[in-house]
Length: 216
Length: 182
Image: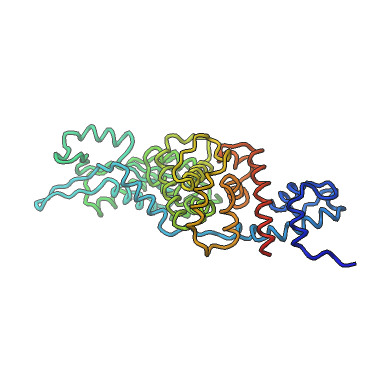
């Protein structure tokens, strides 16, 4: 007496059956194997040859799926940049700082001011996350109202003038004195913006709204 | 420096809603690989997946005001990607029902989409993309992404029994194909 020809015929029968000869449901066995619980045999399975054979068979069949599922899929490079540049176009970025020189006007988009401020804040010890904003929110709205009369005549451009108002949201390290970190951020950001943009009057509003422990 | 960013998604969502684009950028950095991966498994094509992931991440930002604060951003993004993949594969046909697992996608459109696909993709990907959309979505979200049945049901606006039944059928179909190739 010879063993039945391996696998194919048997596997096909298995996969089209509702139950095994012992009464075990094929769907549940497939679920058990596909969910990675092939080794967790219940009381019946630990003594049942039908169940054990089916589980072994399904494990072999399902293996390529498990393998593919555990293969990392690297995200395409540039996806984040593409998404963010699209969103920045959608945002009505009408805020500029304005300086007039004898050669003409210099405008710097508020978004740039916010980015430079954020990058400066991120270098301050104790700062874990810094998020910058200058074109949205309550303060920007207030500034918009306040400076309405100075709008550029040819475009819907809000002018912050030589004053930049930047909001920074910070998450800081647990244990560092929060007010000192915040103060350092204000000083450092003001100095950076003065150096990089030549802005004279800079208001940096700091909101510390998260504290992170080192183990996180 | 972003690797030090360990604030929660909920924090970043809240800041993004207040107008901090930086916060949304961190969310995109965290989740863009997932959006692409799911899109790739669902539609089987790199370029479609890239477009789909990008559209989904932009749509998520545009709809931030509709995002429920108690929900998880990750689950929400899974929802957007899955729904958009379904719409793409059914050529923009608007699905009226919220339950996207309710009805298999239009077979004609599925066949057409499949005919355009690159034949170099490997056998399992073929088998996967040959599944009706509801089954494919359930397999991708549960077996590839590791979501529980309840989470898959939440993402697809379906029920746990429906998800389970799609998975039962999908495993038999995949199993039959895979054993033929052994």
